[in-house]
Amino acid sequence: MSDSSRLDALQRAHTREAIRLRMRQPADHGYLSDGVLGGIDGCVTTFAVVAGAVGGALSAKIIVMLGLANLLADGFSMAASNYLSVKSEREHVERMRREEEEHIVHVPEGEREEIRQIFSTKGFRNDVLESIVEVICQNRRLWVDTMLMEEHGLQLAGRHPLRAGLATFIAFVLVGLMPLLPFFTATTNVWSGFRVSTFTTAVAFFAVGTVKGWVLRRSMLASGLETLLIGSVAAVLAYAVGYLIRQMYLA
Image 1 (cartoon, one colour):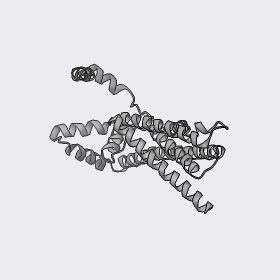
Image 2 (cartoon, one colour):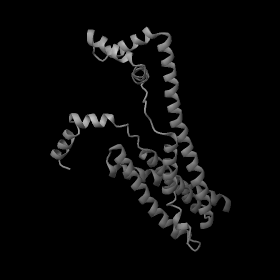
Image 3 (cartoon, helix red, strand yellow):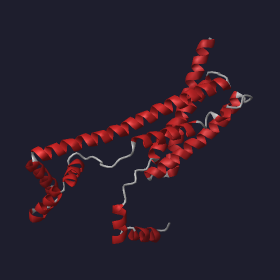
Image 4 (cartoon, one colour):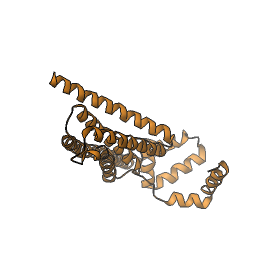
């Protein structure tokens, strides 16, 4: 898109009507970031298991069993951790909401003064400042929300814990399954399967990395290469550990 086209789109998005419609819509809390994180971790950990097993000269069937066990166990663990993390954030917001509501009941003038000082630091003075304080403090919900955001720096609307956990688990399993696919065929030679697994995993690393770059509005190429490099280092380390352990037991 050219600079003039982007400018036109930006101006259309900031007309009075466009702003009014956008502000009335609920905040969009996408779960793409949860999926990207799960996909990267799933691919890294599963391919690390594959590389370590190949380095240890294990059979294709053993590689599949170890890989699947790791895939499901680690995927569930990561999804549960994300679920609990998001849930804790929401519980913290609700706890602080109850505290602020209690403060308003018992020390309303002190809470009004906090609102006054918050907006005073933003540059409002005299009658304008008092009008802002009066408007906010007339609405209990607005009063509490303002305190949560301005005093405590909390985000009032957040992701749903279960959806965040599911997005992480699904991406972890789907992307993490790619390094294992070449070993599902019983007749597959381990080394030929490992070569195919290396290629498909590299593609998966790069693809997930480019998605991460798109989500973070970074260079998609740089992000893809970065993720590929991280995955490659993890794979080399896992292979080296498997190889060394095999040499120790064969010595």
